Length: 274
Length: 297
Image 1 (tube, each protein chain N blue to C red):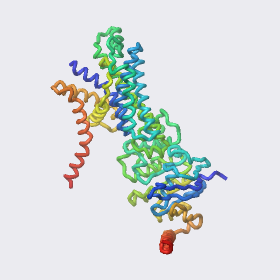
Image 2: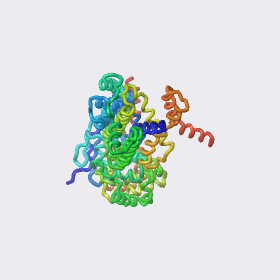
Image 3: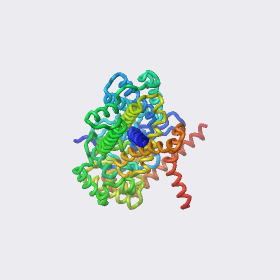
Image 4: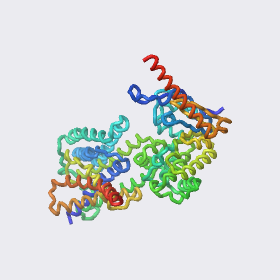
């Protein structure tokens, strides 16, 4: 039995603790991803899905809980060290690539993720040819624009390159952070197709956060619905395969109604005791 | 003619300052105020060593290394203790004032009667049978040094480490997501930038024949002016072009100043003029954008 790609244990975090703005973002989340799992995380704003992703990537150090990647405890590792094992595509296409460096330079940096960076010359002709081949896999003709500054490309092109860059060095875990949310519909569709085919071809363990129910239905083999810092629903196997947008909407409606019940109960308590 | 020669020579010394400023201000996108302190420290260390009879090359190299140490200190304060980079630079610059007074045993250190790098080079060249003046030899030596360093930096910029430094400045979140230790990269970058600035100070002191506690005051503005002037005058497509532009920008800036002084500008007004120039150059693009918008609107 191989180690799980990701093991999250009792992850909890509260923002602004001890102030009037105190918000519990995660309250004891447990999550295990077996190798090759493709998990889609849904949840309304403030449900904790982005906090979960940031906590796994290491850009947020949680108050408690542990995170293991491929069996290695990375809980205390800073983001750049975790990035040896975890690749990430951000929502904002301008964050995932460096505007004033060329396409080739961006790719070259990604091609040494997790390796020691010394005085090697990544732009030399052999590596240039390798990276050119990799870019041609996108089918966007960007292999002809290797020396173009990244800032000259569109958001969709940059996001496609960011996805490719995440996979140049095979990651133990791929994090997709609403990676199509900032794109126009055509680019978003293109990126989804690329995501699907790359993840399938490489058999990558993937955690994708999205707001889009159709995406959740279409992609992956497991759906998590987060609510109030907890996993409210976990759909796997046949449940996931059968899930339709309407089913997911019904689940959200259920959560909303239970929230209202909570509010009613609170009002009742106030009336009785105050 | 002599005025022109002298201005070009000083411009080439300031080209190293300009390259350092390009690295911190443009590549790392950090306004590094250590610069003012580093320039003086580089000068003070090299002059103190020369006064103790050290070989000029070793004294110059020591000024360069002292500069690197200043930059690394600022980088450590900024990245390890999360002090804002401008404040970190101010703290180190302020502390260096005392260090420089100790190193020079006062506010001034004259090199009168000491053989500097330039005298040594002149002697070596003329010993080979040539008959060149100190001015001409200095100019050639500095042109080779500044050009060589710009080429070396250009080559470094496309190594794995060089790309990591550039990514750290351009998109720090991307850099971290690609496993770059942005803190370490910042420390290395500031160290390198200040090594160049310390070297610039060491050469400037040897060229003018003395070090002075206030020689670095406001020197970062000269560095910025050189970088900006280079950007305005020369192509900026590749990092190599940007390095050459910063080098030439420093020389052009120095020539402009020489011309202004020759035309009768009050030397006391120099810093004021330089500061206004940088202000205007930094704000003009925004002003033009606003004008364009209001025309289109």
